[in-house]
Amino acid sequence: NAGVTQTPKFQVLKTGQSMTLQCAQDMNHNSMYWYRQDPGMGLRLIYYSASEGTTDKGEVPNGYNVSRLNKREFSLRLESAAPSQTSVYFCASSERGPFSGNTIYFGEGSWLTVV
Amino acid sequence: KNQVEQSPQSLIILEGKNCTLQCNYTVSPFSNLRWYKQDTGRGPVSLTIMTFSENTKSNGRYTATLDADTKQSSLHITASQLSDSASYICVVSPNYGGATNKLIFGTGTLLAVQP
Image (cartoon, rainbow over all chains, first blue to last red; front, side, top):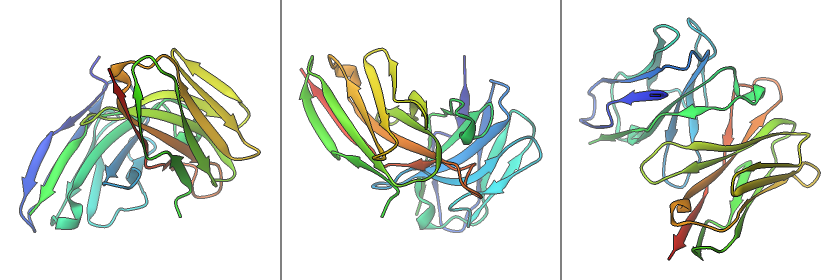
């Protein structure tokens, strides 16, 4: 089973460039998430999607946009990359939201460096 | 101050020994508390999920406990193996208005199991 698949795995961007991180899940989950993980900090929520067609800002949404293209796919776009966006990005999915106690499955991560 | 604090930050044990990792949280009220294992360079993988009313949950050699009165959780690893070397992350799901879609992550305990 593929679970949650993220692409690309690694990317180097120049300041001001744009890019899109792709995420797809094959578990028919309703909820999808984008997190970032920085050294010495816990994972922080960028955006959350409870279902197809809905998105909500998380703790650190500035500089990012998302699209819930369909039930399977949830993409994260950096319009004008900044060095502060250098991080590891994780996509995740679950049947329902975190309060439900459902298992949340994470992708393998995308390592992004902005120079 | 982080709402989810983990200790120790890092730990080295010998293969075959047991260990206990601690998690103190101030999130209140909360829906559930989770423990994740994150191998280096990989995404987090769920180990246990406990609702606020549960005291213990096991998954093979991993046993999590929860004391909602003292706001403490622990993860006990029995008969450690080299493959247990990873970061272990405590995660709390809030159950108060505006935060039910969020997860609050600890910064993790880095465990190294040596032969």
